[in-house]
Image 1 (cartoon, rainbow, N blue to C red):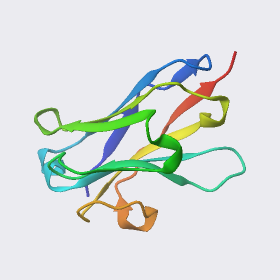
Image 2 (image 1 turned 90 degrees about the horizontal axis):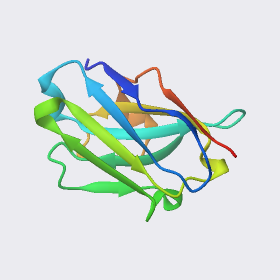
Image 3 (image 1 turned 135 degrees about the horizontal axis):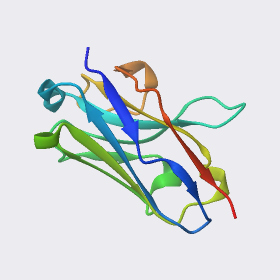
Length: 123
């Protein structure tokens, strides 16, 4: 099972930007799709974005379209989530995970979850 570690979270003002990174423990991550999810207090974990093993296919939740960009660099065993125009409702713990599916928005298709990184959007 591939292990991943997220980083890049923090406190940002509304309208600001952050880039999250997800570093995998092994080069075999290049065989996996990588997905981003988030969980706000009192809410269920929800899909944010995903990228296929090659980086050629991406998928976004409706709230992420036009504001977030998912990408990966297999040479660095790393996936990224660039988040722009952040809103207070984006406040959550953001998680990265890997999937053997080509690409998926379903949490059940993912394993190798990281510990998450907190993002707080507030003035």
